[in-house]
Image 1 (tube, helix red, strand yellow):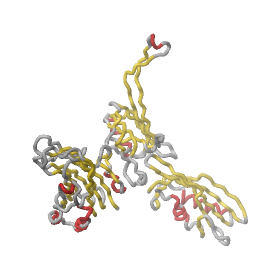
Image 2 (cartoon, chains in turn red, cyan; image 1 turned 90 degrees about the vertical axis):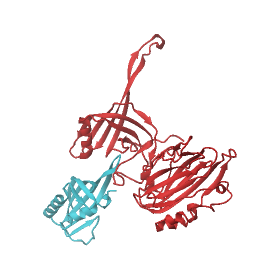
Image 3 (cartoon, chains in turn cyan, yellow; image 1 turned 60 degrees about the vertical axis):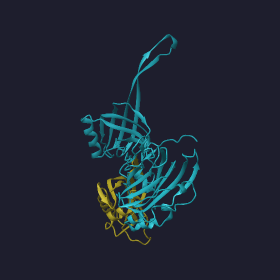
Image 4 (cartoon, one colour; image 1 turned 45 degrees about the vertical axis):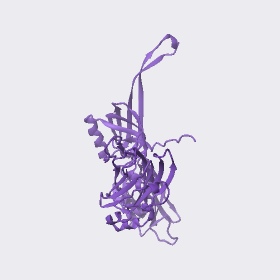
Length: 346
Length: 124
């Protein structure tokens, strides 16, 4: 299939925060090479060019608003360095800035151009019978880099979509932590790329902190590859609510389901919210969907499993902590590779 | 979305009282003079990268009277009522309003004043 043609409305200029400038009608990115003409015998009659460097400018044409123009005016006369990002907006096809659904467009952080610039030209056009417009010229003062990054999809959660924390996405509010309790060599804790190592002397765990962006029912699904048992915890408001289980050997080997879950009894006593108690009655809540996948050797089996925690009636602003960890044991350092999927359910 | 397809409500609100009968598009055959009918003849949207920021609405208005002088009197009242800018009505803000054409004629024992207005409408 041929590559998709980009509509002008989707490719635009963003500020350092990755938000769009208001009421833009046109953006022009111009990159120019500075060259020196050379000639030598090998080139015959053709003049050669040597690159000395390059320059870049971005022109933005906008409908005039007082605030929008004033921001540019002060930036210009103060010579303020502005970090610009030029790229596609995140697809929010059912939302519209002009209709007030969202305050601005958000950059698609998966790929974009970025550089620092100052404003070298600002022009207001006020024509009778027409809307006032203004044009800004940003002159690049740093390299213009092509960046591949991660998208903050926290604002997209209300769309009932499914987002996987992996290489392409980052959910704002989730914290990459190094709160490992592991002490000893090979104790590396890195949750940003969803890897945990633990050894035979200490437990290991790490967590993502999540601020609920909108009221609703959420499911958190952890997909992991692990060499050994894993426990997954969801804490509501950091300690008010806590559920957890430890998978045991029989689970992992597929001999049975979660008959020994310590969640039964122990963690139920910690529940303070009726909505959550309802969830506990849901067997999918604490009975994992284990799936044996592969075997490397007797001590280092690899398992793939999926576990979902569903919590109803989470309120905007509530804190939620999802922890993945392993208890100590074994003779080698064990590794958990995980991705987390968050779904806001209707 | 700017609800400019409903712009007739604004016209009706502004013209109400100028003639005994003010109606969209049509009146009964037996309606006495004078009366006013109006209707949308065009509408278009202006867009920027943020979406649609304003609509341009064209409204045709017809004043029907039994005398020429009365027709002029009423059409001037229509003009006076509609030729105003920067007003807000419901969720709409009319940023500009101007006449784009005006014509007059006599037919079927009636004096007819036609006037066409263009309105620039933003979200209120």
